[in-house]
Image (cartoon, rainbow, N blue to C red):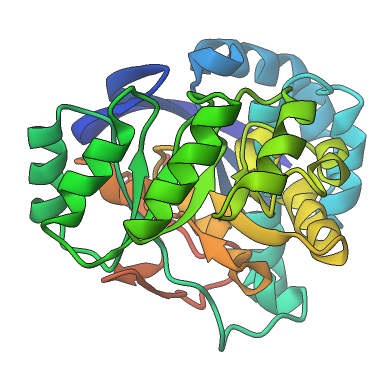
Length: 339
């Protein structure tokens, strides 16, 4: 395979904030793999919280160039396993390479990935639209600016119930809330009661990822479903979530790509967990890959590209939360200006 990569600065429509910080520009690395005259693209965003920069990922990618360019892709799973020996602690970069390999593989086969996997797309979930943490006035403005049937609201403040109460006054849409590890045990339990009355569907990652014993207490006492995000990064985390969370929200970059994410979803279903795939604030390259996993999911958050001013490509149609898959081979992504 031939390897190339490019760094992009994705400008957001609005400042995006969660309990850990805020940003206006999302830097991202796009990986391109070529074989037999066909091209596949993958993506991994920069994330200081997890310690991955686009420059660092690109530098590591150059180290791997001989390994990748001497490899002939026949099966993405085998390719992932081979690279895992080289990328054990570089899940974000592994994700970009893996998405590109899966995209390329699907294009070589002339089929979208979900079709290769034998999945039907007649029943797929709607996507939420994310309202980032901000002043209450700005959060209201964002909600009114983008009418949507299903919102995920970022929380993690001392005024979270008041925020949802005020937002509820201006919409009847379903709410999901994501505390991004910002709450404690009693706070989560009490918040669940108030949030249920306010039409919230579930709570995502209320506490830090390693609070397993505390999550058992919360799980037993929360009146709302609980979705794991930071607590379910890799395949090893899935069984830990049983009896601590209602379901798992898998992120491709945290898992190391679409290959392990798919295994996580299948395992989660076997264990009786609800399944969800989330996204970062990323371009349509990453969002296209999420779309291929929809038949496995109970919930999905694939609004990342909708938050951008300058998406670098296009993939599936998303209108009022309803997702229409492109049907194109691979992940279905097309870049506006291929490099």
